[in-house]
Image 1: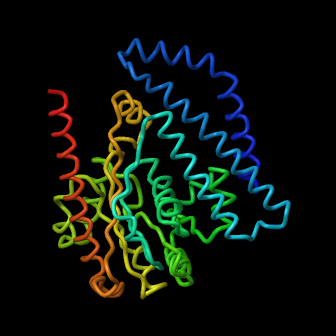
Image 2: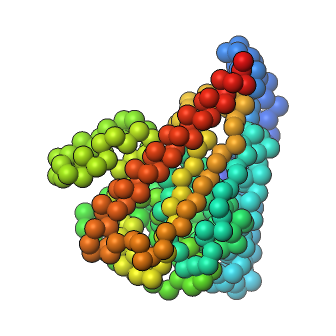
Length: 331
């Protein structure tokens, strides 16, 4: 409650200020972009998305308040519908303001459930895009594993905690309660449900990759050798994914990688990317039958490493193809 007493007024203030100061920041941002030679005006685009985000967030908080006032705060169906509305419209806003368009390949891999989705994590938009794919494209109900810090977002804080999700405390000294919670999260999933985790644990970049490899090398040289050639992803952290499998041992697994969000893990990276035409984001899914997934008590880590290396190779090939297409189109 204390957190919401800060986050909700801050959201209201941000939404109002961004809107009423628009004439000022449009002029200032345009001058700044043009002086730097950024003809696509990336700062204006990003701030325009911020306006859209803040008002969509505020609408989500308002609708969640209405649900509470009408005695429907416990209705999962109403809140899944709200989540679907939020993800769909945020993605529309991202397309309208920043030119980001998402193409989804093989969405039928998510049906029927229950399934577990292990997804690549490369940018601030990963959770939004995965929510759009699962709720809107596939028409499924997600159960997320997200970091606890995201509760600073008031819409995620309210709606996310009314739905069966788990906000992970990454600073916990004892991981057992957290892993037990992940097993409980997946134990009651039905044919319309997807359990989602980002096994890398954080957004990938070269510095984080080097630190992760060094940490693995210090405790498991064999595993370090398996993932040493990784170029784009981070070595997966297997404990959370294994706990979700323990909770529902009959689930198939869906792996997801994407290209198009590279470098969008910082404010500067986002501005640099928006300074050029943004190529479509490819979101690619592949389903693996549970019979082909090792037991979480057995060779699961080695299997997950091998799948992550395969995804790394696929991302590398996709990025090289994009680079070649860009060179060809530029003459």
